Image (cartoon, rainbow, N blue to C red; front, side, top):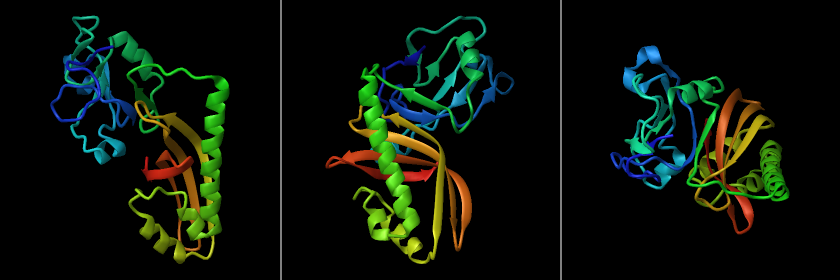
Amino acid sequence: MTLGKNGIDKAREGDQKTPIGVYHVTANLPRSKLTDFYGSGAFPINYPNEWDRRRGRDGFGIWLHGVPSDMYARPPRASDGCLVLANPDLESVARHVQVGTTPVIIADKVEWTTANALEAERDSLAAALEQWRADWQSRDTERYLTHYSPRFASAKHKQAVNAGKTWIEVRLSRLAMFRYPLETDFVVVTFEQDYRSNGLKNAMKKRQYWIKEDGRWKILYEGAA
């Protein structure tokens, strides 16, 4: 795989670095819609994501893509920040990609852990997520808002919205959790949410960023996925 000419941890437009983080595929661009430079096709990802923006990172146009038809692969550091795969490898990956769902986790190294430690962390976060859902559904707004970090931007809006509900039902499905590279106790959570109340009914894909503060999981960001 080819990375940016200047390595990893992208921060600025034009720095020719590849970002580190948890991203998702936003489109599938087939060979027929691209020049030969991109080979078998391309998959744009959502850089900069919400966490990048919060840290003041910018830039655009980070893709997974192939190589021109007259070569097998490019050197290890030869892109302007994109991830470039040999065409056979990209075609293999493409069979499993779902736009908006498939995660692209770009890390500087493999982090090893034990199965027991991983299960304990997953269970801890899953319990926090379930308590958040239950507290939201209970309409106990004070308890519900304790699940959000002081750095969360829209707590007052949530308080105002919940005040007008006489009943709320929330169901979650297709839950996924991914630890964020280079960060401590920071996890990207995505799920499908079915929300019903006396005034609204909707279904959406949601993404949340959970971080540990004072030993407790808190929501730093949430929005549509």
